[in-house]
Length: 326
Image (cartoon, rainbow, N blue to C red):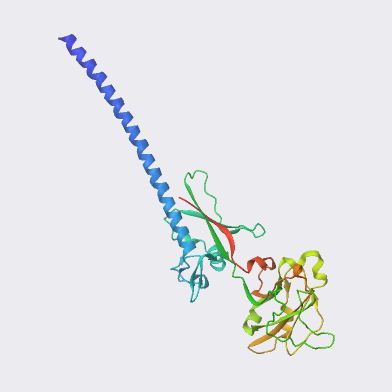
């Protein structure tokens, strides 16, 4: 009887040990499975949060639609899509004014995200000559394992420049006329006849533009040309004049490789009235291979000159990169 009892006790002990091992292995497996489920859930949640945030920023102008112009509003939902009154949202195009405002107050986007969520937002222009625009530059801690990155291709509109005049010569139409009769026409020694690009005949392209006095007092003005004018010393025989119909100027100035600040000219020619009409006169030799486009633009006073660029006149392609982590 003693031997039987001892044998039963040893068998039971081995059975309990085996059962304990099995339970332990199962518990470890359950922990591993649970951790994987949690990690997957967290990763999926971050992906959803990042994609939802990107959709809101890219596809909506925010609420209110002009939030970037309002200084003191607490309840703002930032959206970066360009919005035009009467037209609505401009598809896949971001407003640089909205982007700049979000850069000034990056916490506006943080308030849209779950608690303890951080983000990094950069806009990388495809044109390498344009610098990267940093909205929020935070570096994730080294111990952060999960970072979700959303990369979208977008257009962004600088909206920094108001175009008061755009002269784009119609070099293939010898009868092309702007409809404007230059006040220099038939002046002896200063007759502003149009060029003939079909015969490579030099001449003047002249066009009027108007600026109201409020803009004259609040903006800086520049004369811009595209890159064609800078090739092969073309500036040696391409010149310009800005005057008014009542105050004709005869001395022409040369173009340069940089935007030309014309503040002093605009100011000197302006009279104390609600608006002033100016005339831009451009001399060109009529060579089809060396024609160029010219623009008179206005920017907010004290805008850095390096931001006054031809490629800022139209929306530019870029990569919108949003990183989110918890």
